[in-house]
Length: 202
Image 1: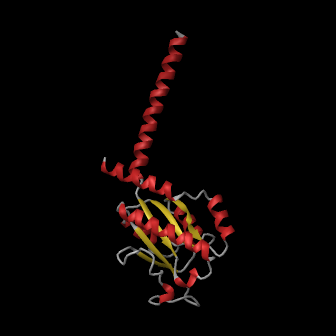
Image 2: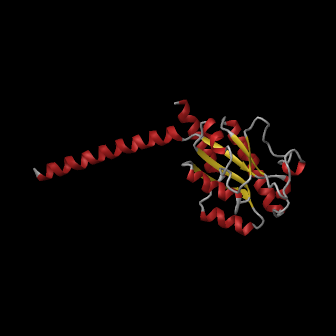
Image 3: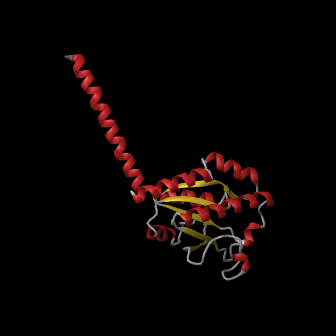
């Protein structure tokens, strides 16, 4: 009798575990609504980045923009405004390089703090887009990108730094941030977007 009860208990736990896992999978799948945050890649600030790191990061940033656009997910542009001594809006130095594949209709945020969520409309814009899973790229890996990633956690978003799509004034610092905060690769982002799109269709 005890042996039978043990077997039944194990079977119950296995079935319950499978049901729970399936429920969690469905819940997680339903929640994955990605957005790409492209942060501070303005002409004035790109000058401080080593040329090779800038070349690699800009290549991957454009790749991410194309990837998100092809899957119909939002791309949000974030610009830093330093009112005292930084470039001012409507100047070439304030803008992203012309080679960046953003479009005028991509939502645009102007921030005045390192954290893009701090005293800005970023949270409002993301929610209007229906997104709650964020992928961050841009400048600087050790300041504004990282600060915005922390800010995203405070607003209960799932947020990921993207490897090779960030840059800073020191390549070693960028690599350290990628390692310490488990930055995801372009291929992983691509896989997530493809699976998210399939789940939406289903």
